[in-house]
Amino acid sequence: MEQTTSNSGVLSALSTQMADAVERVSPAIVTVHGRERQPASGLVYGHDLVLTADHVIEREDGLTVSTHDERTLPATIVGRDPASDLALLKVPGLDLSAVQVAGASARVGQFVLSVGRTSGDGPMASSGVVSAVGGPLRGREGVLLESYIHTDATPYPGFSGGALIDTQGTLLGVITTGLVNGATLAIPTADAWRIAEALEKHGRVRRGYLGVASEPTELSEGQRREYKHERGLQVIRLEPGGPAEQSGLQTGDVIVSFDGQPLNNSDHLLALLFGDRVGAIVPVEVVRGDELRTVQVTVGERKLNGAYP
Image 1 (cartoon, rainbow, N blue to C red):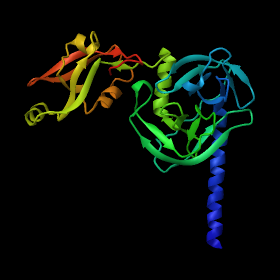
Image 2 (image 1 turned 90 degrees about the vertical axis):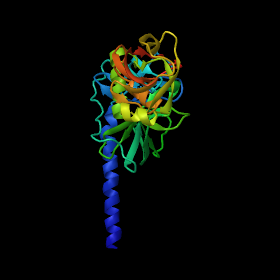
Image 3 (image 1 turned 45 degrees about the horizontal axis):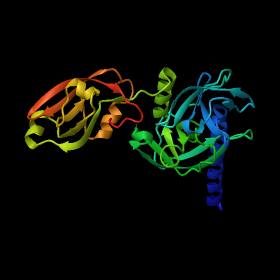
Image 4 (image 1 turned 45 degrees about the vertical axis):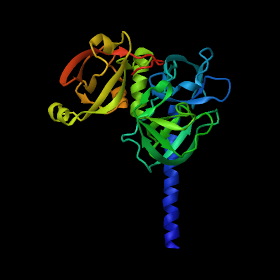
């Protein structure tokens, strides 16, 4: 009997903690009316700014946001990034505190809650655990996402743009079903916030590119000893007029490092091209024949439908 009472107390405490977590995050979750059918969710990111899923924004005219205190406010699009399925909205007069970010990254097996606001009836939530933390992941247009969170917490209709939170009510990631064949994933907060910063600054995410098609290759034993690199990316094709060709890279070159970072595969190169690389002059080490050379490459800006990294 004592054991049963003890277990009941633990479950009651956990239940209260999870309900408190939803209540804590609720004011920072809004309803986004951006399509004719099911409304979606959004998160208060900053002063009068809401971060939501890009695929739920199907119209710009009549775009509105509803809040926990029963206000409906007009919104405009600051920027959107279909590749990561994120969009940033400006909502004048929103005047709500930003969602609180978790102090640690999600861990496999961790208790989590998916929380959305899809109507005026208040927040909705489901519970589960973190099933996987992975990455990199190729999303839309072949663009690389550094990491993702997978959870078995049920995503109800309209949860895209909502919050994946821990039991303290702090944000672990932004929920989306618009990345890979409708699968429910969460973009970790650090990645989502970095994309939101780019959207606020530029209205888009500027992704660098070199204009090379490449394949992983192993260096010879002698090259490994001499150049202190074990592998690299062999250039099999150059985009005519692209940054790599203009900088003097050649077909057959083996790229062994980019800005001092050794390269293992093309996904690693794509990850290094993310951020403020566009327009930067970056040293690229290549093995050409039996010689190690450094080529200065001015990083270009990748278009989403581009064929080269």
